[in-house]
Image (cartoon, rainbow, N blue to C red):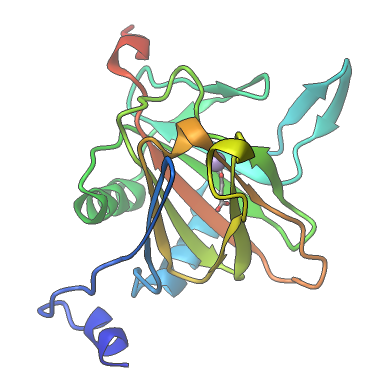
Length: 216
Ligand SMILES: O=C(O)CCC(=O)C(=O)O
Ligand SMILES: [Mn+2]
């Protein structure tokens, strides 16, 4: 309770994260990190140019089961699951949020993927954020707003690590940082939760490798 109170007092040091270490995995979790989570959720719902992409799987196209938006510094394009994302500029709100997340994570970011899960039917399947554009030396910092959803991690090669999956219930305002080399050894997902009727917005701050930034 004392930790919770500290969150709303700008002069108090913010509580440290809860750490999880396994073979090839390092995760830091700050429950309730964003004291302004309500205002952020309302603003992002309205301000972000959300779109629903189509992905190609085995020659057929399907709508992605969530809405997305890709934000970044100039030249920071990014492709995943065959989807080439349209680059949007940082809004003042998101630029300020990036600075706060960088301070907590201790890492610089040049891009941001936003996901909007309209309800518990929307999801993201098992994957790692290990695309060639991403800097493997950088953390991935994830801020959750809105409905609480389960976030699971499991090793890419279960024979090399503890087989039991790791699970977080990510709530409104939680910050979770996946440090290197987590993306090289572990996968993560947000499974469907049909009983969840509220929406959730998630922001993952990332770093595109400098040699992949297209200077125009
Ligand atoms: O919504 C989340 O918590 C995770 C999103 C994610 O893994 C991604 O966008 O790559
Ligand atoms: Mn991911």
